[in-house]
Image (cartoon, rainbow, N blue to C red; front, side):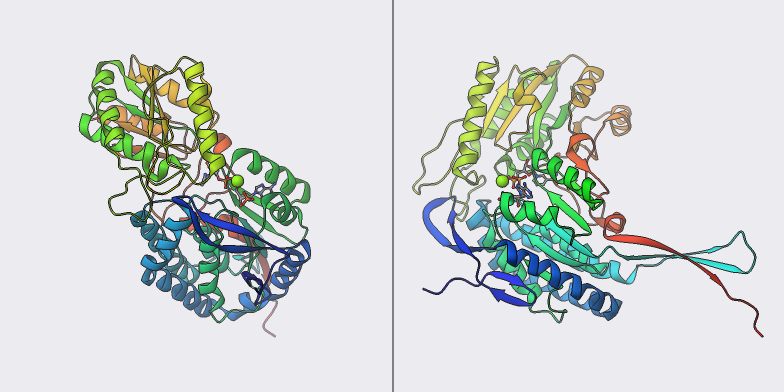
Amino acid sequence: MSPNTQLYIAGQWQAGASEIENRNPSDITDLIGTYAQASAAQLDAALDAARAAQPKWWAAGIQKRHDVLMAIGTELMARAGEIGEMVAREEGKPLAEGKGEVYRSGQFFTYFAAEVLRNQGDLAESVRPGIEIDVRREPVGVVAIVSPWNFPIATPAWKIAPALAFGNAVVWKPANVTPASAVMLTEIIARQDIPAGLFNLVTGSGRAIGQRLVESRGVDAISFTGSVPVGRGIAATAMANMTRVQAEMGSKNPMLIMEDADLDLAVAHASGAAFGGTGQKCTAASRLIVHEKIHDAFVEGLVKAAEALKVGHALAEGTQIGPVVSDSQLRQNLDYIAIGKAEGAELLTGGTRLDRPTDGYYMAPAVFAGTRNDMRINREEMFAPITCVQKAGSYDEALALANDSEFGLTAGIMTRSLARASHFRANMRAGCVMVNLPTAGTDYHVPFGGRGASSFGPREQGRYAAEFYTTVKTAYVAAGSPE
Ligand code: NAP
Ligand code: MG
């Protein structure tokens, strides 16, 4: 059997140095395929090709860049059903969410296609007569993108689209558990009229290929999404090399349920934000801080909602919660259930492995009550369908608990009080605050990111993305005399 040519380097599809298996977490007997692993030499070749291609892409001009991004986005939206099925099959999210993710990915490209045309600078008068000043944004150069598995197309899309829009070249290392989505996105990009080497897909493990990529002197900027420990390491490496870096990492998002909240809406939003995507979202609601007056009614509703969720095969009709992504993730989740119990939290429902007709990594959504904010289950990101309820005697106490975390990505409040909602917006230490909305679920045209250990570097998405993907040049021009 000839090896699979799934790496895309210098404008050529290539076989890797080795291959790994990609299996469906809903049914581990379903072998999706074997996927190429790049060698160090292949990664270096991709970086050299990107360096050579980038000036050609910048010189091609804004109409060209606009048209290429628009074509990629349009194709992603048109093929959301087909590609979304692969996302669901290899990542384990329900089919509708897989399709939605691919459609959204298309929107990132069409949004940034329009941003290409809006790359306008500033004019200034000089304090010295006879001199004119202009300020322009130029590409950073070669951008390394390292992405996680939980949004295997959307996260890369919101990085690749602005990178290309602003005239940069890309070397992309996707997560090794979701290579099929990466190959499908690359096939679309590779078909465009772009310089060979402008866009490169280099799959391989984080330890080998990821580490070598972020350490490379051939990289001008690194955009990373993933876990805190890996993000910390990448930021330190980037600092040593004076490479620009942006890292979006974990979180422990709080949701305040106040005594004046609409109870049914609070239960629906909390359950959706805690368990949607099997809890494997950096925006998941994992700390539910509930006013004591509504506590018991809310917890009763939440347990019912969790037990009503249909956990099953991602591609099966009616599935609301798919499997956990992998065996190691499932084992880690079950460890956290044991840790929570040992810490004295009360497990009200779920937290066990489930049997389904196919052999997959199924887990019952879990609700812990009677938790304290200093428990590990309230401090550490679990990335699991596990949520923790803690009781608060007042809004002030709830806000203080919410802010007592090293993370700060998203945070929500359920209340009918305008005064409290306004106070929360102003005093919650998070990158995104949600009023009467779930902590998960964001738009594509406005900035996304967090504070504290959740994010490092400039924001992603919307026009704020220009801060990371461009560098500013200030030009001083003396016209001289007309004679
Ligand atoms: P991860 O282990 O940090 O991996 C993320 C990416 O980094 C993968 O491509 C991984 O490669 C690679 N990598 C691992 N070690 C590396 C190294 N030493 N140098 C360079 N690259 C390396 O995270 P994950 O397990 O994929 O995803 C789960 C985590 O991502 C959670 O903590 C979650 O909160 C976070 N996340 C955050 C956001 C956000 O926007 N804030 C969004 C989604 C996910 P492999 O393929 O080999 O693992
Ligand atoms: Mg990983």
